[in-house]
Amino acid sequence: MPETFAGLSLDEPIVMGIINVTPDSFSDGGETAAHSAAITRGREMLAAGARILDVGGESTRPGAPPVSIAAELARVVPVIEALRDTDAVISIDTRHPEVMAAAVEAGAGVINDVTALSHDPQSVTVAADLGVPVILMHMQGEPGTMQANPHYDDAPLEVRNYLKERIDVCLAAGILASQIAVDPGIGFGKSVDHNLQILNRIDLLMGLGCPVVLGVSRKSFIGKVAGGDHPQDRLAGSLSCAVAARAEDVGIYRVHDVAETVQALKVFDAILSASS
Picture 1 (cartoon, rainbow, N blue to C red):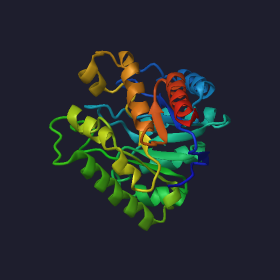
Picture 2 (picture 1 turned 90 degrees about the vertical axis):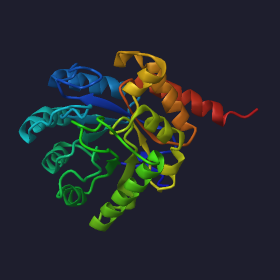
Picture 3 (picture 1 turned 135 degrees about the vertical axis):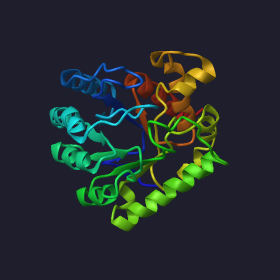
């Protein structure tokens, strides 16, 4: 397992703050759609302990419509340029190679693709040429239809095998193994049971030899399991998932609630390292 990702040590958990520069995010409903609000949120997350700021300009919530490349660029590039002078690593959350290239030029240091660089045939080549770390996420289907009827015979194993295939594609394209992280894509083309099964067997992903990124923050399956109709009512469940994943040595956590997640993970690690 690599000791670092994007220049950040994996000796301690890395918290990745979500900045949705969109009007239709499932969780914040456009709270940071304006550039000024997104930049302010980013600086607040950094102060709260985030090490990576993940900037996205296209909602990938279930049923979300696609946006144009021009619109996505107009949303994310000014925010990345404004945050590049911080201590955070900036990640661009996109499935479009044109946005990847422009975002890296603006100051992004990580590409986070919900399609594992499969949406566009040029994505793998562009990512390899850019030479920045990548996060490969599993998604069954497209955002618009992915929750219609997701099906797996063995969800944890199928997710693991898909991500292994995408790792191999990236390696063949010249992306270094040390620059690859994987994300099981909780909530992306998965039922409540699929999500729980994958979280229960997150250890399967640890065997891929890459850092694991977990994005469960405020997701709807938490509300279906334990209550919480509104995304903001799912903090406790989100923290529960993060702590359970930390018990399996997951290294990177993509979250909305940075301060709370940092605190929960610090306490968990302190308990494990305490001697009697």
